[in-house]
Length: 263
Ligand SMILES: NC(=O)c1ccc[n+]([C@@H]2O[C@H](COP(=O)([O-])OP(=O)(O)OC[C@H]3O[C@@H](n4cnc5c(N)ncnc54)[C@H](O)[C@@H]3O)[C@@H](O)[C@H]2O)c1
View 1 (cartoon, rainbow, N blue to C red):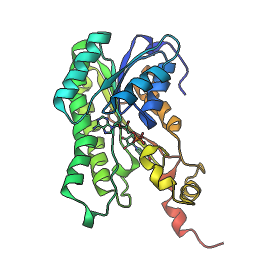
View 2: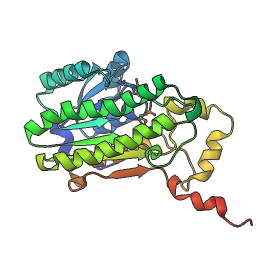
View 3: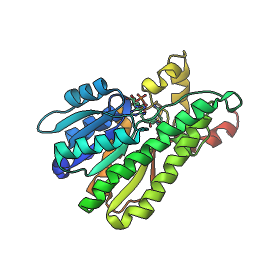
View 4: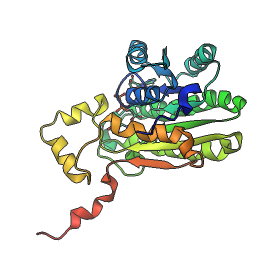
């Protein structure tokens, strides 16, 4: 965790998909740094609860019901956040879905819904919240991608395509908005246990198997990933723009293990 420097105390951060999982951990980590939070989620009750439960001390948070695929809802969320706080300094595009099906059986509906939530959502939020940051003279954006954006993952073709798009959106935003003082970077988790992946970890032995191929020897929890997001929003990363921080415990380095000589 980045040491509390007080720099977030005057900053307003919007986090999409903040009701649970990684988004909720990011909200808690930023609140611990003194940020004011807008917790956006299509699960409005969950957003309210996360805002109420994760924020301690002098920090402030509001829950906002928002489906990130809906342009009107995103515009309404921007209006609500700026009416409440008067500004927006940072955005975390974290909301996502992970439907699983082999490509041969994938439906057009699920393919398009995955792209809508995971890629159209970050585009809309970037454009609408980014306009406020531009008018203010700067800001920071972190997009939650995935190692799946670079490495294909079994039964997750739509998801991986959407996350590759998120990485491209990150670079494009960095290129186009750098001169407006807005940095954009991505965080790509590897194996992480949340509600999104709970069905997988319910399979006996899978968590242990996955942990065994991660050099750090364990599957991540949301708190393992949230610190990288705080860093990329902070002044400590003020010259990092358009890049991906992979938070996978070294998982994507392990291909050669499969051809290690037998012992
Ligand atoms: N869990 C993992 O193993 C893993 C690995 C790599 C990347 N990620 C990424 O991390 C991010 C967070 O995932 P998580 O594991 O915390 O998932 P999660 O399912 O626990 O939480 C996702 C949150 O997003 C919200 N959401 C979904 N669709 C939305 C929409 N249209 N509008 C607004 N909110 C919406 C949900 O209500 C939920 O609160 C996602 O972008 C995911 O792709 C997760």
